[in-house]
Image (tube, rainbow, N blue to C red; front, side, top):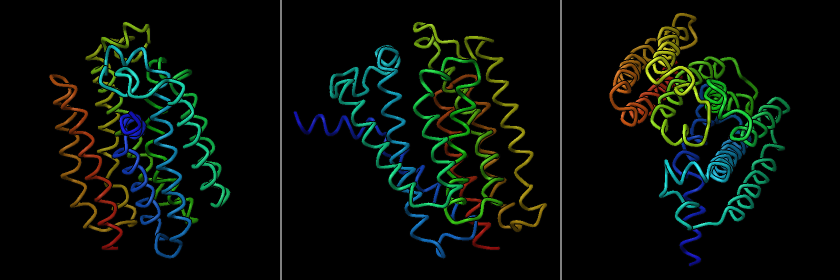
Length: 277
């Protein structure tokens, strides 16, 4: 029983996603040029991101437990692996760990962390059911991992560009996921973007945002922030993301997964660009 509960708690955090968010924070510090010069603050920021992401995922499952009985019945709460109360307490403990780590960082990083924590807690109750607004909040949270990493080491100039590009791509992915979850969201009375304007128009909104990100992706090269290595590396990432967006019109599940891979490739392009700079 204890092992079942422990596995359920771990699942609540979406451990892969939480660890990836921590890695993205380190990438932000690296792109800022301060990862190895300020390894302790960068590590603290990455740890805070992992805890906060896990906490946000858990609290989201707590509030979404009725929706998940329809959309995701195998998640820990619907299948009975963990109780709603246990989930809430676990989430609060993770949030506390994130706050402790964040308090060791510069003021700007602390401000970003506090804003993100407030958005994470309020997301499901206040923003998720508002057409496009919930998607924008998730996009800002996802992109801010890079910004947080840069702020932890005292330089947000280069990570700010990565933040904007990542946020636009994340917005697109969130819209596709809302199309994927259309039945359950409608059952719960949520007013997501696909419900408000229709699935295909919502997908086109997402594609438009992604197109802006793709068109803006050469900016670091054009501004001499990163060299030709970055430009060559970001082109295939753009191709994968556009392919994913096209796929989402016939298969939203495959589309959002492929878009995530493209986003990882784009982050890797920034890393390669910084290494070669």
